[in-house]
Image (cartoon, rainbow over all chains, first blue to last red; front, side, top):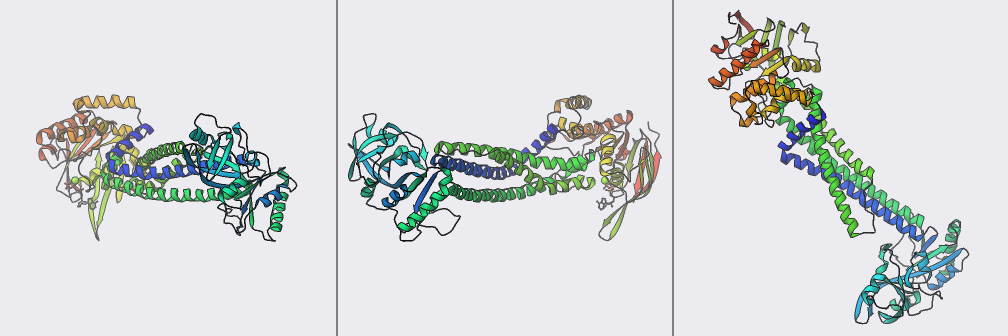
Length: 406
Length: 227
Ligand SMILES: Nc1ncnc2c1ncn2[C@@H]1O[C@H](COP(=O)(O)OP(=O)(O)OP(=O)(O)O)[C@@H](O)[C@H]1O
Ligand SMILES: [Mg+2]
């Protein structure tokens, strides 16, 4: 049978069984959708994380208070503090050889007001080095001044969105704003760079770390970013920082140091888990679709027994009869798969629209793979019913009592 | 063209063996017109299925065009059916979702004949069977006589040597039945070997050679002198 004739023959048969075919289409579409959506999201997340760490730089270490005993897992990003990291610790690290810059960080959220306008904004208490380490630049004015870390100057650098909302298009440099119960003079506006580690810097305000300490009434640092001079000294610097902090913390090792490499491997673990989840969901939905295909094809073969008898009487060999039922299942799988793929692409487009900084996209191997899996599933599960049709004795099939006369 | 040698076909029903065909000997020449009659259960349909290579004998041999068929593979006998044998059934056996044209075209579609050649052949048959204005109707929209004409069109599309009809007028009123039988005889006049199973004496007596079956045996086999 020629492929076009076969397809038309299949199409006619499929469209006669609208209800059943639709059910199958949906089952297969869901399977393909699940595969593509999950890999698309996973891949987007991976690219996003990779991009963020590119910005952070390979020669940056992050010191986090608290120690997680388990090795390999995620570092304690939430910071379950045992002993505070202090400004003194940060200054001591800066004095180590090979350390080129140190930026302490105290984040918080506080109400910001200028004139009659007010709103909540993310507040980062840090130092001048923060800008270079996080690769932030100023669009206007300047960054925080290079002063001692304990210098609580009342100055701030604000994000562009905050600037717009508090000052409109008016003059901003030299203006005063109120953050919580303190006043700060605006000395700069941050250049837009979209999201940075999940924070929208355009909506943030950056103040000296000592000011943040009084504003939030806290001594402890949330993070210390450490930039080492050369990548080769990363490991020794890391050890030196650990030793230094142990000494300063009465001989107790109560900090965690993370590097780009260690974070990436942690994310790789998460992505691997996600891949397993994708495989699991794909497997289950395809199994469900497969069983549906088998049942639907069995019903179809049984209902079309007289047609099969006729095909045989007309001189159709068993292999062509088998082909007819196999290609019918494959055709449904292909159409359902394409539908699932289309829906997934639309959904990812929507997700990208909501989170523009995350590059959601299903890799081509997943697109092709999901379609292949769908078709392979269809062929696998239709094989038994198709074989049943192929094996039918022509006379018995022609005389089948179940079906009506045609 | 056809030769049956001591052909038997037994069916096992429970622990009983039914001899549907019982040591049958039969020779049929190209172009003959045979009618097969006999009581119900005498083995007429079984004989016809055997001749059409739809069924296999329990014992004995069937020679088709001098070739033994007992050793044919499934695929080889399918090819013989496709190229040389046409069937007409009492219940038409049309595919309900296909139009008259598509039903007639089906054997060529299955045999991968190119579309242009197919259309030409089907058009010829539609004209000949006076079905041109019914070509796009599905079986449900056709009368019994029209359906049987479509079925005959399909049976002769591949220009078979042998046309086997099992009670082709069984479901038709006498006028449609007359038309159908005249059509079959016309085809026989063009050289097709025709074998018709019937319960209608008037129809049976029109054939040039008649078989009367009883209990799986050919009880009588005679020439009528019709031509
Ligand atoms: N598949 C089968 N299984 C068991 N017995 C069968 C089968 N097919 C036919 N038979 C038996 O074989 C015998 C001949 O059947 P066949 O159908 O050839 O009769 P027939 O002459 O065509 O009868 P009718 O005029 O009623 O069509 C009958 O006894 C029938 O019961
Ligand atoms: Mg019969």
